[in-house]
View 1 (tube, rainbow, N blue to C red):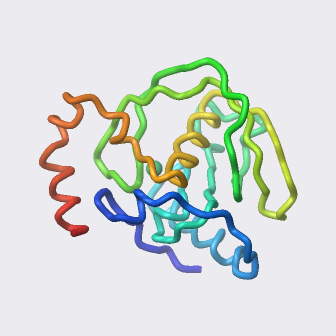
View 2: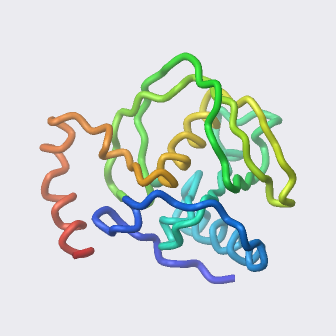
Length: 172
Ligand SMILES: [Zn+2]
């Protein structure tokens, strides 16, 4: 399965609110493309619109990370998901495959319940915390047309001004 091009900052698809998937006929090959592309670029999560497809699906794999535990020790697929019952908050630095070279401190809920379909299209609703909760919120943001620069402070934007401008021009 092919590694696909990752859409970068400034591309309009990253600002689009993605729609729920209703036709699941090509889902398996698309999931494989998401994983292949995520692993190729050393990501821990990748959303469909980062491949230019505005559908509510993303993949996550934090199994190689220090904070990984038994529950998260496998590649995960989240389809048509929604965040529910958020609680707590914590701030940490995040990167994004659509914003290479950029790190932004982002405040996230410490724990969330996430309702979604898994890769076998089974309905799931699970509580996530720690790094997994953070990655799911980051990817779910993508599906809502939101990226980490939306959390940037004025000094972040100043620091990355040239870099962001270059990417924006490449996508215009
Ligand atoms: Zn991202």
